[in-house]
Length: 193
Image 1 (cartoon, helix red, strand yellow):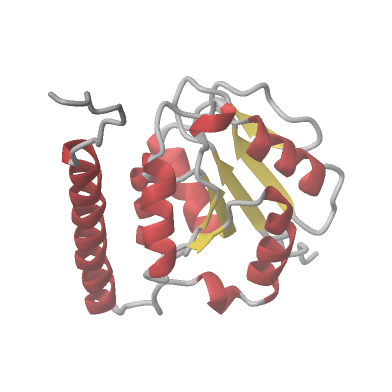
Image 2 (cartoon, rainbow, N blue to C red; image 1 turned 45 degrees about the vertical axis):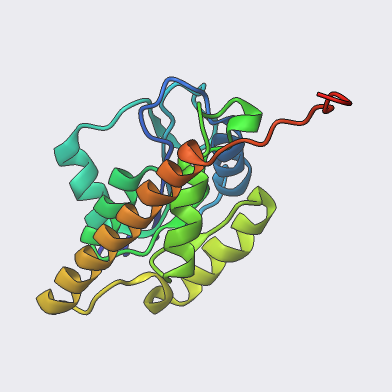
């Protein structure tokens, strides 16, 4: 008897930061819960586990590599390591950067990095969780939209890694400039002095 093909896997990764990322986990639960046409696996970290989808607080590296190879779409936080792991596996991730104003991180580095990567066409940037439905459905409907390289095209992978190095360097330089920029003091001048 012939077995049925497995449905596409949507891999959702929030990383290992101690801040919860409920926005992304709740989206995965809402979007993937109860669906029969896809499998959703959520690595939820410090956020409570979602219902109705596969979930793991943490995923060992070897298992993560297997999940990347099986995934049709990756949705992740804006951590550079996670983004690069997805790209190394041949996938352009849909990236939802953590937002420090929502208590999801300590600073805006994920937003800065993800925006830059989005401008370079290296991620599908999504800063509005409501947009995730459209982006993930697009990726599932057009797998080429989220594929970084055809098989065996090592030169393209190397060029991608070099571009990431340039992007990371630019983000670091921008952060340094922001820290060193002189701050103007507002105040009154004394008359006659």
